[in-house]
Image 1 (cartoon, protein in one colour):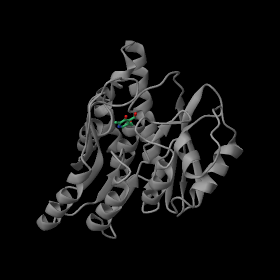
Image 2 (cartoon, protein in one colour):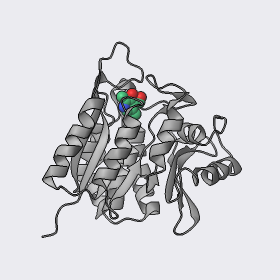
Image 3 (cartoon, helix red, strand yellow):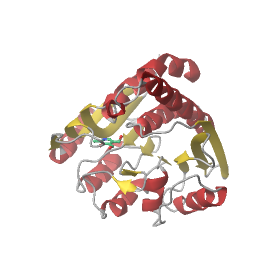
Image 4 (cartoon, protein in one colour):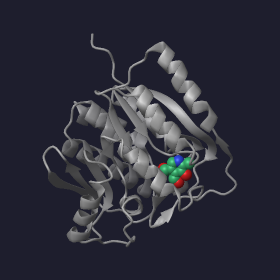
Length: 281
Ligand code: PXL
């Protein structure tokens, strides 16, 4: 039997709020991929909408974990990086990728740092330039529009967007990552929202949209990135993987919206895991 594929997911543990590692583990596992984790920080909740959350920075743990793994000679089919706990983690995560990746390892960098035109709490204006350094080592990047603007020194504007704006952003992102780009949060009207993908192998921009839901839904960028990754590792093309990720994320939001629960606690991605497994076949 073939060895099960393995991802190293580098992200925080937000103990409540369904984002980062608490969605990476179930989603990547449901996709039949082993998910090893390097926690960058432990927080009582994510930082979006909650006050007084605890935050334990784990910067000093990362390289000792990596060094132990090296001694075990474990191989990684993918390295997935998300929310970093400190600016110092940028160099450490770059070193981690260097240590753990080989020429066959798919490096997916989700430059988690901002949304709706603002940086998340805990990050200052010097962070985007640092995050850019990790993006440059990636095979795939998955910025939202705000993150794409920060990475390319483009003034942020709110949507609906024009095709010219989105495609000029993709053009600028080619110097951030010269392989595969997935730009999330793209919408040309208030009905549909989705992603634009660019693959340097085909040189094509592709769009994929689902119904647009009003509101702020925490953790959905992480859910999207994890579904995309697991679909890519299951052999799907960039376009198909993005379309699966968009569908699953949008359905999870739709169900959450119907339930009218406190959205800070995350979306009902669990309801979509059977469908994910089906779509990956
Ligand atoms: O979902 C992105 C994310 C991940 N981790 C933490 C966050 C956020 C967004 O706010 O606060 C800790």
